[in-house]
Image 1: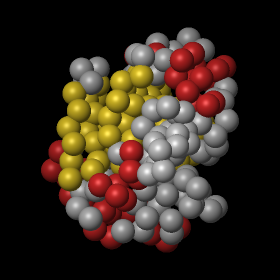
Image 2: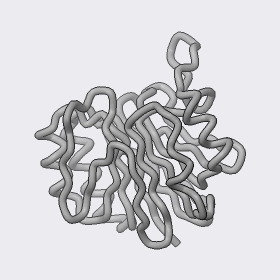
Image 3: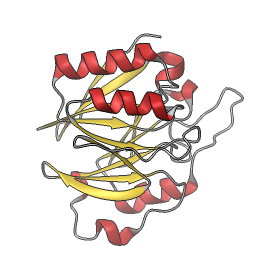
Length: 195
């Protein structure tokens, strides 16, 4: 069993960072995923130093040059790391992930972390347009990861199944909702992070 705490789009909000630390202390997840838009490098570094579980993060469209890591939390541009039997594939770019990185990996053990959503999945903006990544949608169809977490589209926060993949838009700005996902059961808990 692996408990994964998912958040995105903190936008340098101190309430969010304080509540992330509180949830991690209380719920004791195995992993924290930060799906971008920390906005301030100083804010992100302060938060990362307070995280006491394994953390995988990607940068968002509002994060410039954030490359901080410590013994618990790492900011990825594009890369993969194995932890507790699961593989965490992190992509900051909106390009098709390198399929060679997942060769031989059981899709049920693959977690995909991005800032941007896949096209047609939790990517509907207020005007009614879909703005997700076609490349990420293609990757979900081919790579079939068990979980894909992202943010970016504040008004589309939520959870949706796309074929075999559980997708989670965990953008806090807008709704203030983060998510705790337990694998392999795919149990989902919505957590109010406060606005």
